Length: 246
Image (cartoon, rainbow, N blue to C red; front, top):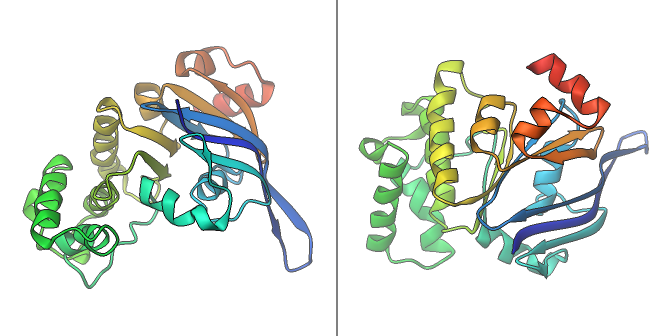
């Protein structure tokens, strides 16, 4: 069953000069339950916009979005998809005045009305999962970038999402911190979590992805298994991009 499916999704932005920028053009894609799909492509190709539109952080110009085969394209369905779909951004977006424990427990307690003791137990379990159980009482400014991003992953998991979206989660990290975040994501992938990931990390994409999506100029150009796309791309645009990065 497709956890997420988009049909002919378009997202346009209007500039100050009243010109339209077609950030996403007629994108159609599905992500099956338990599948890991990685979106790659040059900067400005519409990867992040597609992800943000799926999660309704951007309102689609046209097209349809389905979650568990139920259309969630209307404004009334935003709360439902936000509760079921976790998202991790380029920047960590942790609340600086709250401890790690408080950052993770805030949404479960407020949105899901989880009891404090239960939320705390869940938070410690998730911190153990991302290798940060000793940082529960630290504040974000006491953590490295990699540690903050792992807390952000734990915070998203605290809502028990059916799908996780990652928008270039390592792009703001120093090189030595990237591996610790990718290791957590790889562990999630191996556990069967449904994931849609925008990333420039080709080694991770090869190791974790069931399918790779290549985007350019707002269009989905090619979708294939990693070994097929990297070794035998069918599109000249894909081939040209891969020659620059591999």
